[in-house]
Image 1 (cartoon, rainbow, N blue to C red):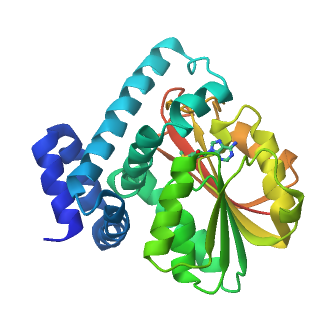
Image 2 (image 1 turned 120 degrees about the vertical axis):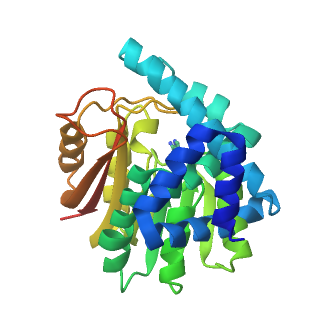
Length: 297
Ligand SMILES: C[S@@+](CC[C@H](N)C(=O)[O-])C[C@H]1O[C@@H](n2cnc3c(N)ncnc32)[C@H](O)[C@@H]1O
């Protein structure tokens, strides 16, 4: 049985509604989603000593937690009032919870159709254009899947990942080591205050799902701008009207994000918005993610 088949069978045994939506997503995504799912599960089963059930449990826990928070958000109309330090202590510094959260999140890449479509955008529009890439900076790798997939395709490049969470640094380092990516280096750092020795050094930057995690996302965009070489290219995403335990900056429309990106001096050369529900005129409450390919212009 493949890892993906095991994952589906265990999801069916655990939670029918999660299993039904998972099977629909897999059917919709065809062969490409199966390849992605197998690749992710092969990587991350190493973190849980081969016990796929732990990955299913992490995914189910994350889905239930997100659904509850989203419902509260849609009723109240705003994210819970919490500051960055509070989130850091409760989520990023909480080793077991953060590890489980990142394992659940990486599984959503193949289990949620909107995340799968964003993955296809990442591969088609970002990965495929990096043929001569040398230095990659990944902001907030979390689970590390995006940066490590970039290294898998371009094994001669060097990757630095900076994340505020020790759990993220540990997980990404462990996967990189077990897949012999000796050119990946993860550090516990705050992306809001980028070290000067990173300025102008990276021809590729990955910044997935970070902007909504900080009180001043424009400072992250300034860091992306500073890190890029002239002509360098970045993949940047942001979650909009999507509640999560660690989302503190509420973007309410796609244009709020794109305006902030262009105000930071970055040029958007491609973009896609994906929602968990049909996007009808930016209805508040439909969790949406915008992914962009940007350059320094
Ligand atoms: C939702 S995860 C994103 C994981 C992955 N990049 C993705 O797109 O799926 C958010 C990550 O942002 C990190 N993070 C939050 N604030 C940060 C900051 N100020 N500097 C660096 N990392 C930060 C968290 O520790 C977490 O790993």
